[in-house]
Image (tube, rainbow, N blue to C red):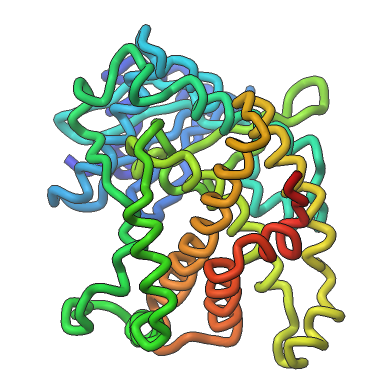
Length: 367
C-alpha cells in the first residue's frame, strides 16, 4: 500500500501516532514533500510533528535505501555504541517493514544549511564549530574496530568506496539513460588522464574506519532553533550510510563551500572579473571552513602529524566530491554549463595541488 494524503490519517490512527481528537480539533495538517522518496510532513499547532518516508517504487534499490536508513535509526535507538549518534538525528518513531515506511520526528521550524546561507549570506563560526564537533563526535566514537555492534552484525553496510572514484573507468555505452551533460563529464575525465590517476589512488587508499553519513551536503545538515536562541545541528537522510572513510564526510563540507562560491560567481563577466564581483567571495567562507576543521580535529584529539594526514586526504576527497556534484547538477542537462565547468576545473586543481588548495581555497594553514 502506498501512502497518500487521503489514507495517511488512518495509517497513523492504527499506530497511535495521531488521535481522532487531534483531527477533529484541526490539530493535524499534512504536507506532501516528495523528492527521491514519497515524503509527508504531519504538523501540529504546537510545532511538533512527524516525518514519513516511503520509497516511490517496490524495486530492490529503492527499498534498500529506506531500509538502510531505518537500520541506522534502530541502531541509534538501541544500546550499542551507535547510540552516540542519537542527538545528531531526528527522534525515531517506527519502521513499518511490510510497507517500507519510516517515521521520525519532524524538526520544528528548522531550515537546511543551504537555506540558511542563501537567506543570510553569512557563515557563522558557531555553526561551523558545532558541525565540526558533531562529525568528530560520531567519527571518533563509532569506529569499525571499536563499536560494540561491529560491522559484521550489520550486513546492510556494504563497505563500498564512493562510485565517483571509479566513474572514469566505465564505458560510455554503460550510460544508456544518462544525460548529455553526464556523457560530456565522462569524456572530460577520460581525456584528462590526471583525473583518473588520482581518483584511482584515492580509491586504493580508501579507509573504512567509521560509520559515515555518505551523502553529506548542506541540504542534509539541518539547523533547529532552540528556546535559548541558539541552533542545533541535525543530520538527516541516512540512506547512503556505510562503513567508510570519515574523510569523505569532511570533504563534502569543504566541497559544499566551494560549490556555493562558484555558483555565486557572475561567470558571464569572465573568470577574473567574476571573482571580483561576486557578493559571496570565498574569503568570507574561509573562517567557517577553518573553524569546522579546527573543531573536528580537536574533537578527535588528533596530533599534528595525524591532523595533517587526515586533512590532506579530506582535501583530495573534496576534489572527487566536487566531481560528483557536477554529475548531480547535470543529470537532466544536455551539456555542462559554465558553473559546472568551473567546478570541474576547481576539482582538478584540488586533486593535483592539494596543499595549495588547502591554503588558497579553504584558508587553512597547516602547521
